[in-house]
Each structure stands twice: as C-alpha cells, then as structure tokens.
Length: 98
Image 1: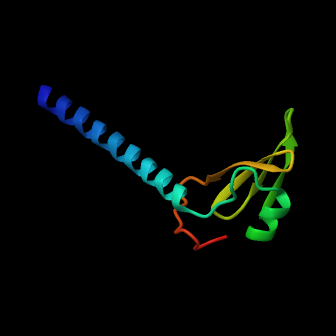
Image 2: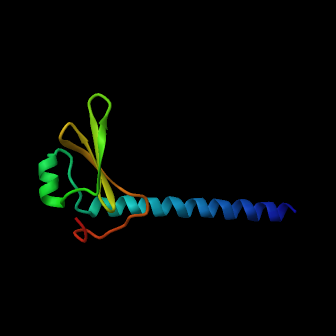
C-alpha cells in the first residue's frame, strides 16, 4: 500500500515537472520570434505585421488596448506597444509568421 502511494506521488511529480519544462521551452521560443517590440507605434505594427484578427476596446487608466493575431496578442498603452504575448501552445519559428 505504501509503495502504491509513493509511486502515485512520484508519477504526479514527474508530470508537473514536464509541464514546467514545456512552458520554459515556449518562453524561450517566443524570445527568438519576431514579434512587435516594446515601444513600437500602432501604425508601425500594422505596417510590419498587418491588421489584427481582433481589436479589443481600451480599458483602465492609462488605457490598455489588445490586438489579437493568429498566434499572439499585442498590448498597447495609448498607441505604443507594451508587450507581445504568445497564445498558449503557440510555437512558431522566427520569421515564419507575421
């Protein structure tokens, strides 16, 4: 009985570690991708990456706006990029998608 419990605990621990490693891989991948950079204007993002698939209304003060693309979202403060975020599970090669 004790062995069974220990084996189950070990199995759960291994699964958790695997999920953490995958998340780290996604973060490393996103760092190598060409995404809109902090400080770019909305006009520059449209010129370089095209129109977003969706635009969300600004919220808060200062106003924060989100634009969605196929594999990532771009967050703006006023009209400047704050940061770009990969959608969960989206791994694409550098330069493969704009």
